[in-house]
Length: 311
Image (cartoon, rainbow, N blue to C red; front, side, top):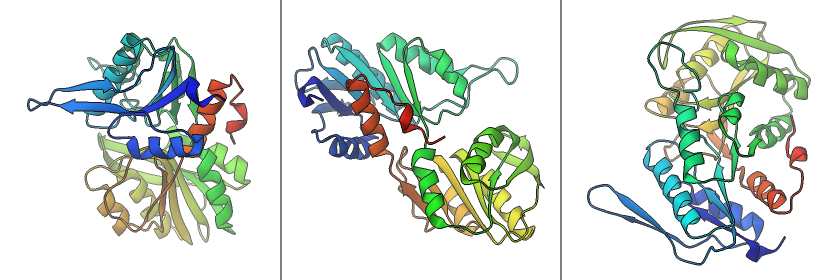
């Protein structure tokens, strides 16, 4: 791998992760300047030549929407500066929950974001744990879809929990939880929930036996933590010996940190696809920098990334 054939740049919000990716790759982080104006507008400028280079632009698109706009401007600037290829590295792909029309007269935000990235000029997308796998089909360029299980599963295996049970907080996450249960060779339980409205759980029932078990709840992201904490509390009341949770994306908005701290959860483990600044003793983050760095290395060398997947 020739280090001068590619460059890695980062937007504002994901610089912490881009620096770790560059450390793993053994290359410097590219020089990019984002100038902000008093009216809230901003401009992007590459401060070194990128002509004929393979660019990897690291930026998760979590709120605010400035993060997405930064990435779009980076892509446009790279295209106009004659980069050879433009690879968007988006550890957390925002708006992914809006992947279909679930009621009349609503937008499909994930498709709109995919169109924006495509029109801006990306040649490849590298992302992790999309809320719905079919979002890959919204793109007409290659999508390398990684999984946080690559760092989460080894962590769970090292805990050596004797009576391990994997749980899904809702029926929609059953496939993900089943994969974890199969890999760890343990039983699976499900939670059946109904929502009063968005981000508000009305009621929940456990399908399966958790008495005396060490339960690990598996999800793709935790937003307000209403579902995950309610599931943990119900399982503890049902006789679970311990309850933990793992998820790829640490959205943790609003009252999430307080809910986790006050819940029956022993800990909740995320990747660092999204930065977490609030203080909660139960939150732990595992880095995916090496996983993304290895994927970038293989893309540059035209190698298969299949062995990156544990499940």
